[in-house]
Length: 321
Image 1 (spheres, rainbow, N blue to C red):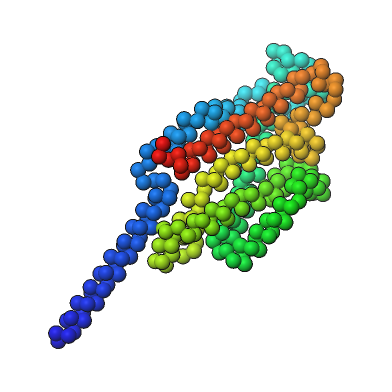
Image 2: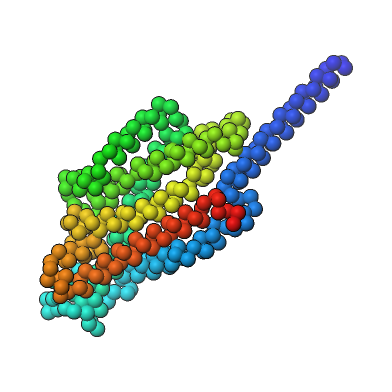
C-alpha cells in the first residue's frame, strides 16, 4: 500500500513539473515575441517616432488632401468630367472652368479630380495584389526551406530576369488596354521583391528563440507563421509596399501616356498628359499638362516621404530613442 501511495505521489509530482515547464515555455514564447515586436515597455511608440519625421508628416498631410480631393470629386467638381462643351474648346482658365478646357471642351478641373481616384486606386490595388502573391510565396519559401525554397527562388529569378516594363507592355498589347488588364498585369508582375524580402526575414526568424520554443511545445506550422513570424516580419514589408504604391502610380502614368493604360474617356493623370505630345499644347496651353504633372509629382513625393518616415519609425534600432 505504501508503494502505491509513493507511486501516485511521484506521478502527481511529475505531472505538476510538466505543467510548470509548459507554462514557463509559454511565458518565454510570449515575452520573446513581445520583445521582438518591441512591445515590452517601449520608450516611444511607432506613431510618436513617425511624427518626429517632418517630411513624413508633410507627405501624410499631402496624400490625405489629394485623396480627399479625388474621392470627393462628385461634390467638389461642378461639371461632369466627360461632358463636352463645343462652345468652350481649348478655353483658358476662367471663372466657369477653373483649369480651362481641353480640345473637346471637357472641364480639366473636373477631370483632374476624377483622375486622382483612378490613379491612386491603381497604385493601392496593384500593391495589394503583389502583397497577396508575394507574402504567400515568401512565407512558404522561408518557412519550409530546402527544395521548396530553391524552387520558388529560381522561379523568382526567372521572373526578375525579364524587363518588367517590356513584359507589361507586351501583355497589355495582347490582352487589350483597359483599367482591369492594367491592374492585373502590374500586380502579377510586381511581387518578386516582396517574396525575396519576406523569405529573407523568415529565414532569420525561424531560428529565433521564441519560434523554437513555440515549436517545442507543438505549435502547428500555420500558427507559427501567422501568430509569431509574419507579424515580426511586416515592418520592412510595409515600407516596401509604401514605395510600391508610388512606383505603381508612376508606371500607370507612363503606360497611360503611351495609350496602353487607362483609356479615354476615363480620366487618369497619365492619360491627361497625352495632350503634352503636341508642341502647340506645350507652348500655348499649359493648363492641359501642368496640373496632372504636378499631381503625379506631389503624390509620388508624398508617398516616398511617408515610406522614409515608416522606415525610420519601424527600425528596431530607433525604438530606444
